[in-house]
Length: 145
Image 1 (cartoon, rainbow, N blue to C red):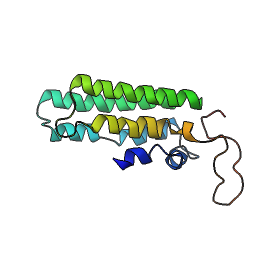
Image 2 (cartoon, rainbow, N blue to C red):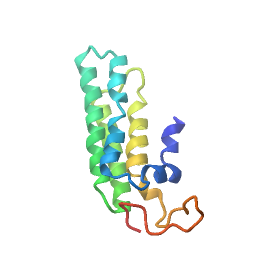
Image 3 (cartoon, one colour):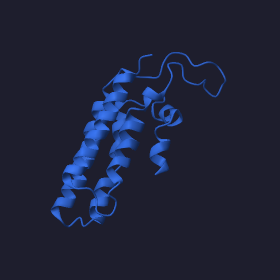
Image 4 (cartoon, rainbow, N blue to C red):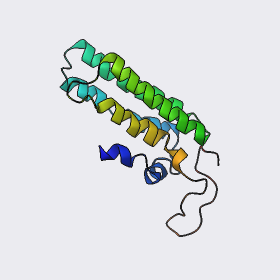
């Protein structure tokens, strides 16, 4: 589960919030994470409740990503990212966690919502200099110092 921890580092935040990456790109990135649907299939996807679980967790991820990326203030983004992470875990628990991976939803949402989507809050107002060695100008896109 080290990957969830790694996605909550400033290095991951710099990559995810680099120039050219906005709300649309973040939503596409999240949309590629079909893990809940695949896990529902492994858990017995022929059962309707498992498919609903997978689709509910996946739909929640997309909606929460849209909400988090709509926040332009870094502090608000981090708070909303953490709140939506908790909401995703509560949704998972209300629907009944995966039988083969009961740890899945907490790690999944920490990685994608608290880590990637809300990660700009981890960055200083003046990020590390670009590879050219010159001091970075301005702030991280979509954030306030």
